[in-house]
Structure formats: structure tokens, C-alpha cells
Image (cartoon, rainbow, N blue to C red):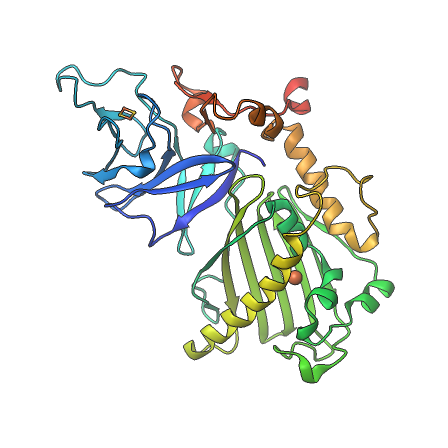
Length: 374
Ligand code: FES
Ligand SMILES: [Fe+2]
């Protein structure tokens, strides 16, 4: 798991100005709420007074209020009021929690969980089809999977599993295609890579739920950063599905996926539920596989598994992960496990670069080679 990327926190409806939303991402708890203007905020969940959980408190007058002794925190993370201290005196400067940059898009509130200054941040993935003429978005679907998020992203980058995991889709003859067409993985500089392939059609077209195979189907996937996956299925110029999966690693064993499905045909609203049902049936087939993978976490090596040419997109993804580890962005899970319950950590927010005096310790990170060299 890596700091310094955008992570989906909750849906626009879930984040309100009257009740805090508590979520766990990267193994750490956060609280999300809206201020009086409706602007969403995401803060570290741990109250720096004596460890109360802000997400179990209240939201009032644009502040989140700790349920233990009523300290009030604004969207900027600063404590605005301590009930036992006179208003003229005000809270001490150290009374602040990390507050993260936020963007609200596609019906999702995202937080940048890291400390990079704005100009150095990897961007949130842009979905140009969203609200564009000629495209229709399905209702946002959010679902949890009991797997490590990298296993889920790698599954999306894997063209070879389709006819084995999704036989009801008509058994696309991908294995045959892969034998004759070398996979070309293209970098989408500097945060990801993608591939697109032609599929030969379907072994049994009569069984295909979506009737994808017309001999000219192209499909492929892309990853952006460690946790955004895009799948593009193009049956013809006028029949396309573009699917966007914004994934939040809840912890080392669980992932929450925010799924935005765009299409440029079957535009009538009445098709929405049918498409969701088919997609979730396919997702369920994937879930059964990824929840049973061993080891649970992706091996960050190419020697502990036998990787073949059809795994090329996965190899490229793992190389990117290594680059982000070299940047010093990878969370040191092993170290955290050893101190579980003894230390409260925060993902560092950008403000830590400019102001001192933070109460919570920064989450342990693996030493980055590039950082050391510079
Ligand atoms: S622990 Fe939050 S106000 Fe005391
Ligand atoms: Fe799949």
C-alpha cells in the first residue's frame, strides 16, 4: 500500500454535514464530513486529545466533534474549540489533526492521502466520458472484496483469465488470440500502462450474455497509479463499454471498489439495472478467484510465480509499484504489525511539510532508494 495517491473515501451521498462518515483506508481510519457550504473534508480520525474516534462523534456548525470530551475540529484539521478552555484563550497550536486534499467527482469523494505539494501530486484519473454527450453512466456501484487491492488490480490487467473465470460470457477465444498475438503493453506516462487486443470472437455466441463477439471486438485494460483500473471493451465504433474501478485498500486483506460504468449505446435508463446485474455477476466470478489467492498479498518479485508472456501487463504494473516504493511511498506493513495497538499513526498530510508540532506519528514507510540518493 502506498501513500501519495488519490483514494476513494465515500460516495457523495454518504458524506453529509450532519453525520461523520468513518472509513478505513491503507489500514488507517479517517473521518469525512461536509462543512456549512457543503464542501467535503477528510481528516485523520484519531482525536489528538486522548485518542477518541472522531468518526463516531457528531458534525455541527461545520466542525466534527469528538464524542469523548467535545473538542471541535474544522475542515482544516485545526481544533476550534475545547469546552474546558475559555474562548479567549483558545486551543493550543498542537491541537490539530491531519487534513487531506479532497476532490469530488463521478459521485465519489476522493482524498489525496499523502504529503506531496500540489504540483508534484499524481493526478486523479480523468474520465472524459463522464457527462460527455453520447455517453451514459450507470449508477455508481460500491462493493467490498476480501482480497488485497493489488490482486484485484492485477486481475483486471489479466486477459488470460476470461474464458476460464467467465465462461457464461460465451467463452471468448482469448487463449487462442494470445498464442498468436504478442501482447503490447504501452506506458501511459508517468503513472500507468495499458494494453488493447483484438479478440477472435466467441466459441459459443448463443451463450454470450452481452453478445460481444462480432469478430471485431477489441478489449484491454489500463492501470493508473496503484489503485485505479480502467477496462475498455469495444465491440464496434458505436458500441463501447468503458469501466472505471477506483479501489481503496481498506487494509491488507480488504478492498472497497467504486465502479463507474460508461456506455455509448443502449442509452435508455431501463437498461441500467440489467447492465449492473450482468457486471456484478461477472464481478462475483472474479471475487471468488481473488479471495482465494495464495499468498493474499502480491509477491513483489517475478521469481515466486511462473510468469508467462500473457502476464506482461502484470509485470509492468509490479515494476511501477517498485518505482513508487523507491520513491519512499510504500507503507511498512511489517513494522506496523509489530506495534499494533501501541501507536496511533497518521498518513502525513501536505501541511506536515510546512508546519511542525504534530501529535500523531507518521505511518512507517519503507526506505526509498531514490529519496536516499537525492
Ligand atoms: S479524546 Fe477527543 S476530546 Fe478528548
Ligand atoms: Fe474477470
